Image (cartoon, rainbow, N blue to C red; front, side):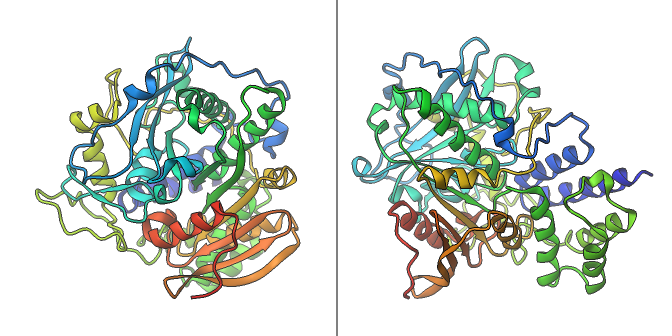
Length: 493
């Protein structure tokens, strides 16, 4: 068997396992890694997104939006507790000729007029911001184990900001295209362009937010989505005087931003957290050069990295100290729920809830009656066409343009761990403005942080896995609240 085949076979078995134990977001990231490894889909691996981005940007088409905001208002979601804020759901067309439309779910802040706007993206690529971000992380509700009722997330981010969840690209969740060939032509650049067209048209539908401070946030493969979306906004702001978007900052968590350091950091994290042996670690450091294409890896490198992975398949690598889900765990009556102890079977509850016809009707979703069920991560997208090996240098572009950057890392994620993120940020060779210190929430250390000159903050979140707001909702809320106010994280208990 060829070298690359050995790695692919192993990664396939690993991704299947974590999909059962953690969720489909893990599977999607593993599939992209496999595709990059083989490059069987002809993925554009241009090293820098700035090199890929076209210099000629067409002005975004704005379609009529009159009356659509009122139609999108959600009176009440099935099984939800009473709330004091408005929520909306619906579609925004991003390509009229193709019939391509993206689904959104929007929750206003409890005091919406005085708060900025934040758009949240999950990663994958191909995973749902409605299913993960809204229903399992930072949204106003979580789903009970009965898959039919909701309970309040008292640490929802709409306590401090108006939050817009976007299912992107088309083919993810309820988002769709009438041109099925679109599902084989998605990639980083087309996703950024569609996200921009979505936002411009959404702001026409909700014009009161046009002049608000605007932030983009996301996690995992959204480490690609968010910077590229922000870059697209900056490029359009230079040429479109009628559609200036008041971008103030971005947030990315446990983010895929630089392939070489992402991989090195993952293996180093495994060893430093007693997940791999001394012998395996020595072999990886001796035989592996992560700046090389995986196709060039030696047999010794492949064997040692496989050994490291084999030691991890019995745990949830996305939350190395967390519990796992071994069955659906759906119950006739809801189990007692806990915000502070995340239920590892939450994916199953969300799938059951969002596939109920009355839920879809309340959300104004699935209006075209898709031929497939809603899924947390897309089985419809058949190719991912471009995924640059690094986007880390876009962070410097944002700082140069006065855009604040927060990079955060749940410190018990072993897939895109804190070591990977630190190695990636070190590529920028930034000068430190405020040295490393512990930050606090409720008299406990919430994590650690360092602030660099130019406006980039790096923060860890103690005890959080890959999806930080799922595992540490209070600490995640503290993080976003201080960032939105432009304040350093609290030094005192």
